Image 1: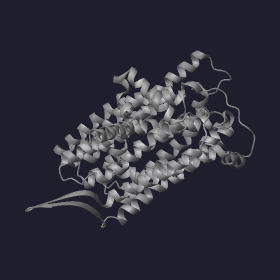
Image 2: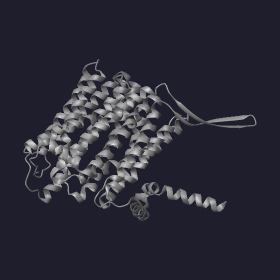
Image 3: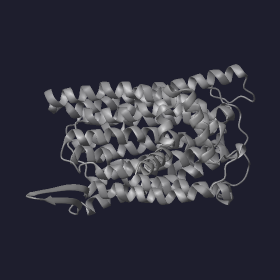
Image 4: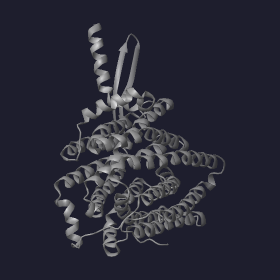
Length: 488
């Protein structure tokens, strides 16, 4: 296996590398689907995990990013990003097989064992991450970043949808017919994920790497360099505040649906698929406009939608009818998928764009390490708050009384989980104020982008209908109000 970088890559090699990275992404996505958040949380709850342990599981992927300093040291020592990414990918997949085998062979397998092996899975994945990011920055032409990664994400999401349906159906069948084997099914999922992930790491080894040139500065001075960059530091502050706010609430959406609402895993997966499909339908549009205008503008458009979705979770459970709650959940997941497609794509790309080419791995690692710290604190704070609000509630009602008839309707019913959602949404809203201080080359005012997007929508309603309504809802509402005033 020849993993040495090349001085110059031909156009054919670049195209081949881009194709290989697509296939590696599909393998990684399949691995993630088998061990995804819904299945992982369901397995943890089956093993008796409490709120704090759920918070720890949610914090692990981001907490281990602190160890990305190891990746910087390895890249500086060996100057071979492909070898580091590939070998760490192999090492990261092995713990998944260990989790599956321990749950399959030992009946007393505990949540502690799950957390222990997942730590190493996320650890080696975190070490591979900066090397992979820097490698991709040099491999993928900068003017194609948004379009390429949106296409890669779209393929991954389609695969995730297909496998999620199959796995959820299988789990519901086993749970209803053979409940004693439910944990064994999760164990097999982890073993398959480990094997497929290993194959993906092998496929990734065929992608070429252009030779990188690193400075000889001390590693600690390199670490300080991004912090001295005023604009990049402002991005770090915004990104850190944003992920902290979101991670107080988002890791507990699945727990809320399983424990508070009693939804079956198939319902949760279907809702997740709805979100994925919404993301698939819109991610190419976000990517196109991010390349044409700026990532910051896309964040400014999509983040308020996501915050509104988090607030909407506070109203889930207000009504006792299941179908009403399911309709609300479906709407939330649709707009969550649309908004997160733009947010995640733009947050990744703006970091790549603002990082200098020669020090990209340092800048990206510092970004990941600092945001990881705040992101990992979020679920832990959320777990503690969930326990604190376990025996507390807030109910706001509206009462109508007339001749012999009294009707009482619930307006807001906050309890253990809803408090988390409200706190997370409010903090996310406050963090948006920090985005205005970040400067991006080619930045265009969001109002201008709205007008351009509306024109594109009119040219192709079938493709752009959803986004068109989202970005112009306030103008539509204003028009309706004016018409009503005229009629009065």
